[in-house]
Length: 242
Image 1 (cartoon, rainbow, N blue to C red):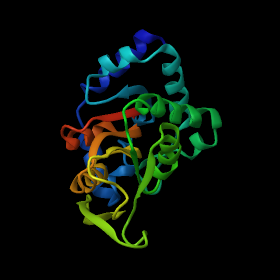
Image 2 (image 1 turned 135 degrees about the vertical axis):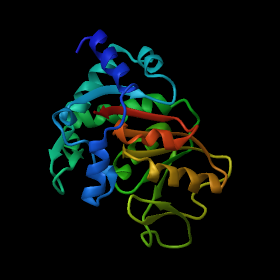
Image 3 (image 1 turned 180 degrees about the vertical axis):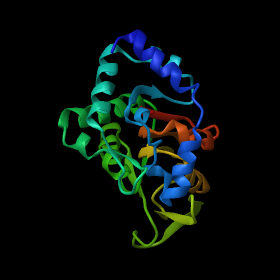
Image 4 (image 1 turned 90 degrees about the vertical axis):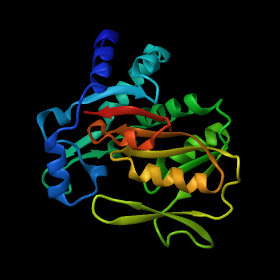
């Protein structure tokens, strides 16, 4: 993909509005919107990008052609499964990325290159697929890895945060004493959809005095506008699924 075409794709992301079809699929399926993407021909198409709270044009200027090539390969390694686990669901399957050692390593390397000089001491990974990407990133940048888990999964004393889902609520937990006030944290997950889980992780860390530097995900579903819920917290993603 040429640099000009890549830029045009990236610019298009910021102007798109959520479709009513996506909203109907969420309500009809009864599933967490973290698995959802508009079930249409366009939903099989991936746009390669690296984005944050700053403009995509600014981020693109920071990306070399080598990195762009890596992002394209990472995107192509992610399989989209239609109608899984229910009709109307477009499931972003990262297991095929994990089967490709080069693409998997590239995804880790891109995160490491961004965060290695940001004085991050905590990488907080969200259950479950945040546990895949978080530990290698933490090791590479010299940070500790802190698992953010579902209820009753962590032994010992925990601190909890309740958050809302499309239907009902859930709870996220972290060990008491895992982090210290004033530490700088990166929150990592595989995908952002509505942003509810990331918001819960931010609140949980900030309650104990941790500075959340940024949230990072492999994949973003921009139609669900999850980044809007993060407020002033930056979001960095490698692939925008559109």
